Image (cartoon, rainbow, N blue to C red; front, side):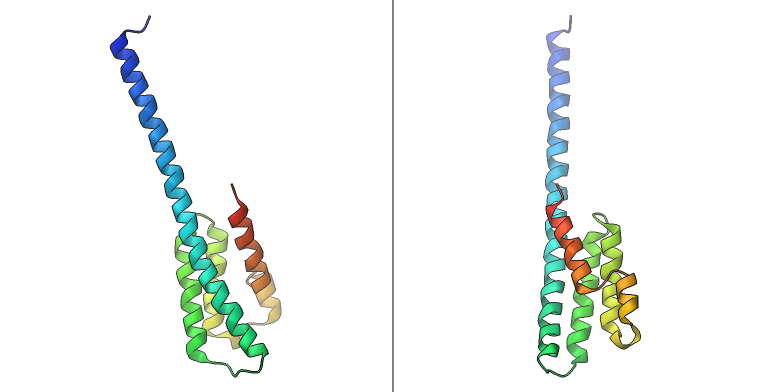
Length: 128
């Protein structure tokens, strides 16, 4: 038979463990949300810029460097959540720093074409 004091101590440890589990889940959810916000900022700016280019606007290196920074910033909170996607965001930043050195084939192979990244972001958003 367990003494009352020992039972309470065991119960306290159980509650503490459940609290840690709940806190870890909350922290993970917050980290995922931060990563998604950063990703959506990079995606939205990139899509808007590409749309403007497709509408006849001339390339703007200042905008391209700003987009590169957004992709680089997005890679940081991702590294503990999805290291593959973090690496691809880092590569995407490299692309925007010097897009003329990248071929369409290289973009596809590195999986950093916009539609490929959007699918990965969607998959991360839907992850349990």
